[in-house]
Structure formats: C-alpha cells, structure tokens
Amino acid sequence: MVVVPAASRRALVEHALAERPNESCGLLVLRNGVAERYERGRNAAASPYRFELELDPELWFLEDEGYELAVVHSHLSSPPRPSRTDVENVGLWQGKPYLIYCVARDELAAWTISGSSFEKLALLERDDGASRPGERGLPGAPR
Image (tube, rainbow, N blue to C red):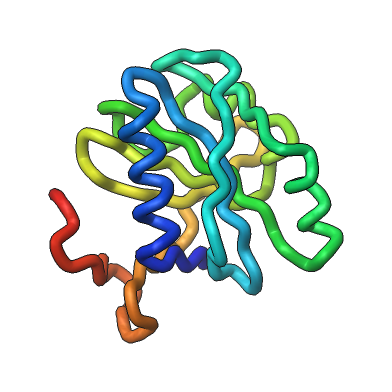
C-alpha cells in the first residue's frame, strides 16, 4: 500500500497542472509506505506522451537513509494506468511503486510494473489519518 497525504497530493497536482500540455514527473519520498513529500522533477522529453525524469542527484541518496522512492508522472487525459510507453520504458522503476495522476479526471493510481505486465497497488489518499482505503479525504478537491 502507498499512503499519500493531502499535502503531497496537492504538490503533485500543482506540478501536473503547471507542466501542461506536457507530462509532469517527480518522486514521492516514502517511509514505511507513507509519502513524506513530493519532489518535482523535470521532464527532459518535454512531451505530452512520455517523460524522462531529471532530478537533483542528491535525491537518489535518500534510499541510503531508509526512504523508498516512488516515481510519479501525469497523463493529461488518458486513465491513470500504465501505457505501453510506460511499460516499455520502466527502467529502474521496475517492481517499485509507480504512480500516475490523470489531470482530466483528477485521479491518482499506484502500480508496480514487472516485465511487460503491471499490477495495481492499494492507494490511500488521506488528509488526517482517519480516512479508510477508498476514501479521498480531500475536502474541496475538484472532481
């Protein structure tokens, strides 16, 4: 399961909206499956159809401190599920949490990709720790 508190969700949504018409990309910094923050990346491909994540190289060292890194990118209008391009270009994210935010639907989904297949991960979006799986817990969020 991946838990995304409201502040991290807001940060990744703001980034996705700011990068339109291209896909945004970045990292969720997780500890025990809970996102502590979202780190913006740069889409070196500058494309609405794919992303090439560029980050501050220091972020990779967070894994040495016990954090897990989860890639996040946006789809402008297609559903928040891995596309053929995502699967073909998964690279070092294979087997790790892989999140996709759909701008048009305001939906966030989590996956793992292994080889040519992908599997949905449980995702909990919360604002106060009281939400249950399946609850958005984000008052006033656009739908």
